[in-house]
Image (cartoon, rainbow, N blue to C red; front, top):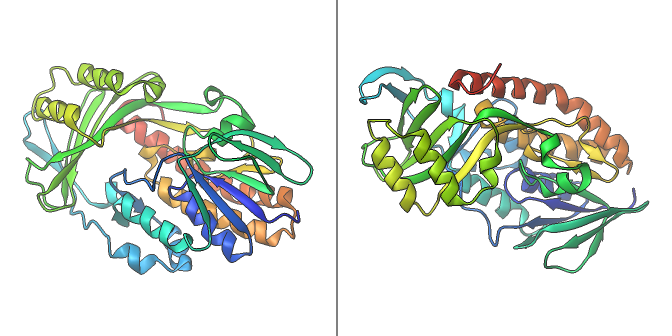
Length: 353
């Protein structure tokens, strides 16, 4: 491969991390993101194991640590709100937890001067040739790139265009949930509270010392279909799932209706026989999502970006060899994380280990 232009779809974590490493190795990188601006959503992400080495290599570890949420742990409560136990901070926060918006801003800042970012646009077609990939966009003019990398999440547009429908590769782990924030009426201070009933769970935490409360309302489902439905249908499903649930559930359901940061997602995994097709490859959740219940999504995205970039740099222009080596090295790690994701869903009661 002589064309060192790369298009990355997705400007969350995996995409900008890969852009950083590719630019370092002499690639001309463009990142396209369908959101109109840098995303400010998502409450917290955590890091474990080798992800710290990646952050250190990128030169941002100290800055990321500055945004540590300093969570103290989670109190388990029954249906009346009475304490029944406690979980250490590491269960939900890993070895280090930071607000996702801060990580996204850091990764964007260190790449913005050397990477072309195209917001408010999305890929519509991919046509591969001997020397490149012709790409058509919803808004921008068609362009040709040497490689295209899909780092655009669970419902990856790149994966759908290059590999086929989502239904053939998604494994639903039996649970879905809504997330939003509200005022911290529970008075939590760098701590969380969890109530888990049969097929449903309420998790709320505050990392802002009494300012805002981040809420997750999870419940058992038999498919991820709600992910693609309108908000009103998602809210109806949440209300149905938590009907008759006491404690703070009624207040949280009212707060959900008023939240301007509402989101909905299901715990699903991505399983593919291969992570590349010609000049197109997948990274992060797009290629091998381990599900939120694994606690490894962010770490896996960062480590995968470094591994992919390293093999591209070492391949002497042979992208096929690079993609194969990337997959061979990362698959065992992904398999371990996906096993953790299934175990986490099974502990909730919505999936099998």
